[in-house]
Image (cartoon, rainbow, N blue to C red; front, side, top):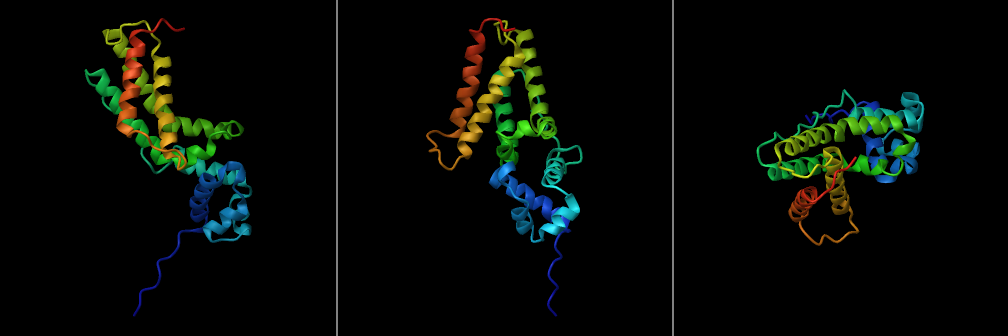
Length: 205
């Protein structure tokens, strides 16, 4: 006897998974409930019965992927060592992986997130804040230990460094951009630029 086909996930979960894909593909504004329902293999009536509105569906998608009950574990910052340069490289690798794992939804929200303040806070808390706080703490320790001799602001340095890594990940993910150098070279250049810039920097407010 042939085995019966595996049962499909419940309609609610199929809609959540489909919405994440469609939001990532079409953007928050461009995604339609019709396209999401079609992607999930259900009709729009089911979507509206379960979620009422597209905004409520987006709330649920963000909550599932970035909320407190998200199935994925919170990012674990690299353990600091006595080698600042090695620690910055480790941070960059962790940040690149975290961005890559979440890039489709992050890219969908770029440019539109100002319309979704609650979503921005959830995404920031889940993705960016743990590693950012760890990096600020490591740079504060470096300043206190004299590893970064200039009287720089560790928060500014952390945001500058994360910005370089974030931009590099976005650029490499674009299918329309020619990759002119390997990821490793970019990462090393970002670390060296930060360290050399910090040494020669003036005090920042």
